[in-house]
Amino acid sequence: MTEPLSLQIALAPVPESDDLTYVLVRIAPQASYTSGRRPPLNFGIAFDRSSSMAGKKLQHAKDAACAVVDLLSAQDTFSLVAFDTDTEVVIAATPVTDPEALKQVISGLRTGDMTALHAGWASTGIEVGRRIGAGTVNRIVLLTDGIANVGEQRPEILIARTRELAKRGITTSTIGLGQDFNEDLLIAMAEAGGGNAAHIALPSDLEAALIAEVKDAWSLVGHAPTLKLKAGKGLQLVQVLNHFPAETAEGFQLSDLRAGIPINVMAVVAATEPAGELEIMLEWTSTNDAERKSLTAICLPAEPMTPDAQAMVHKMACLLTIADLKRQAVQCLDAGRQNEARGLIIRGLALAVETIARIGEDHLLRAEMKALDSLEAELIRASDVQATRKQLTYQIFATNTQQFPRNLIRL
Image 1 (tube, helix red, strand yellow):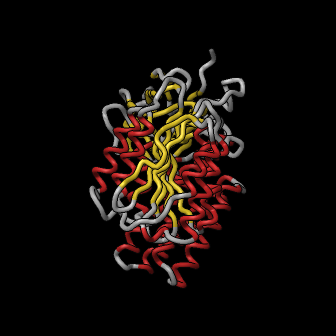
Image 2 (tube, one colour; image 1 turned 90 degrees about the vertical axis):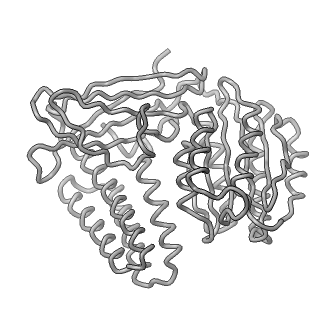
């Protein structure tokens, strides 16, 4: 069978440097390689029912969970764990053979008291873990509107345990509702879990967010991918512009691989001799057979590239550099230096303008400029700094994962 994905490489010189080169590694899964079949889904929801979820939040969350059940079939498994001060396995992992019965159970959910976030997520992991099987996509969605205040609360522990679960084949995605949750924790858990992180301002948008998670899970072709970049003799790996979770012996941990959606990784290298080469090694677990797969490619930074390929590389470098400026802006906001944060956003705007002048008109860069304009306006108003911080952190996550529709980026 044809490999479900390919490694593609593009190069461009770093502006105003004589010895540095951008190397863009594009991990490109095929749009489809399963003849239209979708994998069985093992889907669990860690459902926050703390007191702050009372009213419209709870009702919309229940409606969203019911909408998920309506999408599933008898080949799929569904579970739901509700958490407040305590946790309750409301629906143990079960095949979706009687969706109306499951929805009736969901409709009976009521709010409780505090937020045992770790215990709720961990209990959902236990339920999903009961139904792991070859060819099955396993996913937890953690839905919360608050901050963990019962039980284990140390971010490093929650993140490490999310990563451990991902290694077992269970992805974690997170949905933060409103403005009072810890975005740093939820994004870090999604990164460690190989999943998505979403900020939902309005409860009425919860249904669309959960449905998107189901459809995203159906598109999965590879789980727990890692990428290793090894500079050979004559080449130095200077920097990786993406901020992936810390590199391990296995390589950088990437988000899960979706059909037709590329992941772009940008490195900066310095050649000490013309023959230097960069070895690129990708590993992932196939959702088809649960076996570990690998691909290797060799990059020669001295290779000539077309103007279009170089333009695309400069665009990716610009977007990732802007993400880093946003990261610095978040640090300024945390320190109460809003004017400095605004200055960093203005620098991002200038970089986008400069890049368009270099490579030509581009709708992704125009969209980034629009987002930066909006952020600057919010910083001028300074009416809700916490909401602005959330926007920044989720925009950083979206850019850093570098998952763009395949029609937007071509090599």
